[in-house]
Image (cartoon, rainbow, N blue to C red; front, side):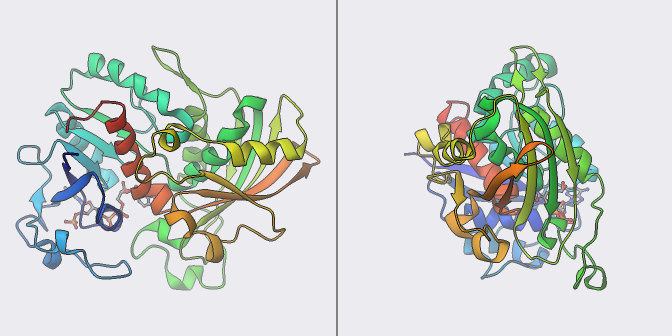
Length: 349
Ligand SMILES: NC(=O)c1ccc[n+]([C@@H]2O[C@H](COP(=O)([O-])OP(=O)(O)OC[C@H]3O[C@@H](n4cnc5c(N)ncnc54)[C@H](OP(=O)(O)O)[C@@H]3O)[C@@H](O)[C@H]2O)c1
């Protein structure tokens, strides 16, 4: 199988580093191009970057010369971990020049012609790319992955969609790694809970409705459910925990919902995409699981773990969900999106 060269916009940043680590030894993709600001451009990647992840900086990245974020000499497939203040213009410039931009940034997620993908849940939203191409006149395209807490919620709700979701209340306990580097001040987060993450609740509510909604051939129809999110930062390093209360039109027994979660599969599993977990949603029977320290890194961080499904006196059902925010919620999500696009024939080898 011919390998594909890939680049990363914002490669020197925290999310960029997660991309580089996730792409190391990828069976299809070769990371060959790093883009960053003009503060870094022209320097060796190892000099321009403070490597802040566990383990050594991958050799594939260390010797690369960082490039300006301008289309021209970059590979056709580009992952974006761009700073949100500049992502809109830069990602659009790459798409206009014929690149496929698989973005982790928030900037284009809610655009009416941009797919916001969780491949197990809404792979068919890729059909919106035809409209994007017609409306924008780009030779390339932009696809996005959700916010790191939204992905945990939508993976857990995906199996329940067929029962008719009408109302959701989700409360997050989000890890500090989701805030980038240096993130939340240690004086604020040590032995504490910060009940505010700017813009997060709005993103979680809107993105969930788009992801669980339908592409009708012309536009996205959001899921006709009310979603309320409470977002909190907690002193956990990796792994976002979400407690969820959900109201369903149908009233299946709790065992049927657990069975739906465990049996849930999507195109990534059917096609055995390299980064796809064998079982995307794993229900844990123990009464005190999932827990971030014990479960976040299982399944290479690509599965979502659920547990404690029980009756909710307000909305009918409640449960807990956990996912790896920098893997399934960031770099791993985008790489899985690109694998899905390749398997759909949407990327050239
Ligand atoms: N899904 C998630 O869990 C998650 C979590 C955090 C962030 N994000 C999103 O991911 C993106 C990156 O976040 P981060 O925490 O990695 O940020 P970061 O560490 O500050 O990195 C930002 C990157 O953008 C580059 N950059 C900044 N200004 C630029 C410019 N004018 N032109 C070209 N490149 C520029 C930086 O290059 P230099 O090193 O040269 O400055 C760096 O590579 C943001 O959009 C953020 O919203 C997602």
